[in-house]
Amino acid sequence: MTRTAGPSLRRARPAAISVKTRDRFVEWVVTTRVLSILIGFLLLSGCSSNTAPSVSAPSTQFTKLSDDGRVLAGVAFAGTSEIALDVSGLTVDFDCVSGRRFAGTDNASYRISLLRAGCALITSNNVSAGEKIAQDAAKSDRVGRWAPAFWPFVGRWFSQNWDKALAVLSFPLLGWLLKNWIQKRRQRQVHVVLAGHSAAGKTGLWTRWKKLVAPPHNLPPTSGAKVAQIAPFRYGEFTIMPKVIDTAGTEPWLMRDYLYSTPLRAKRVLIVVVAPCPLAATSNGDPVDTEYVAKQAGYMNLPLSVLGGRNYGVRPHLVILFATKFDLLSTTWPGDAVSAQAVKRFEQVFADHRNLLSRQCKRNNIPFRWIIGSANSNWGTVDIRDAIETVVMAK
Image (cartoon, rainbow, N blue to C red; front, side):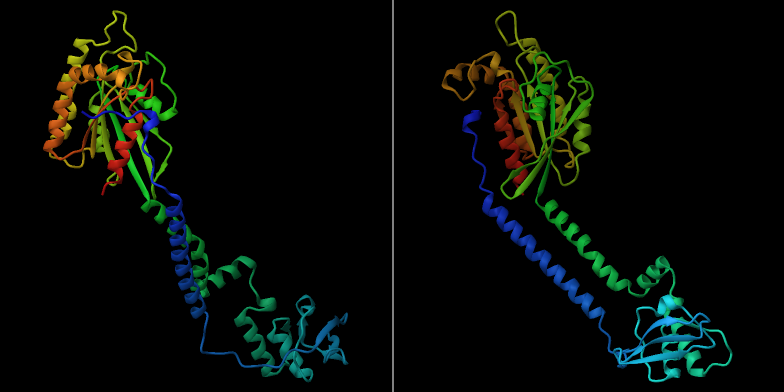
């Protein structure tokens, strides 16, 4: 006989402090290595065997353009001499010139520097070949007055440097994907399907898990199915994500439907709830309704059809027969010595139900647990959780 553990005897969870520290260290090492590889790739992709020719540093700064636009005045060689540059035949963009420094030694070389920087436009046919070449080069490089608007420039830069942009933008994306991959690896999903005859107490157990409070007495029968996503909790180095489905006792086919719809990697747990009577209290003094108990024995044919079928995708990984409403027979939890006679009677009342399920589970190598308790008094609910944790963590 399997006795349920009381709330005060709940097994201690494995220590998770050192494991959590180790997990964070592993995440840091993996992330650091990946980012190092990407940074190396970015640096290598930016290298080139073709280096630009060395040029002398620009030393002349122009500070004023004459009213007729023909003369640029400025200072050369760090302010040691003044210069007046003849820019006839050119239209100078002073906003482009202002604040820049230009290289040159004479009037011709300064004009070429202005055109090469895109700060001037040839408006006369009487210009040298060097000036035309400088203007064509500025157009080709799209500098100065030839530079495109902001967004076209951004698009052009990305088209020419897409590998570098992709490497830079991939850092946060890769980190996010890596973090999510590690979290998924450490998650264990479990779908718990509650089944049983109408008014057996499934909704009470569902309410206990969802709200962590005692369920109200005389709950109305369930219509359809209720789904509760219970808050995830840690178990060792893993996070268990339970999902509880309360199927209506008047619609038993929902049990099979939800087992079929369980995700491939999730563990399936079937909890069949039985009770001595359909009510939360009895008026004749005896809480055992033999007619209701017999109806529940007939209901066992539905879970038996699932357990005995050839479709392994619908078979549960754990079956629990939970005999609830024990508080109608005893004022103490089932593990107390005072409750020994009440436990014995519960085992006799539900012997047929237990034998039907346990034999079928044994035939198909499915773990089976028999638990006595009460959702209203929170008896046996900890044992159910412990049994689910054990099967979820099993490989």
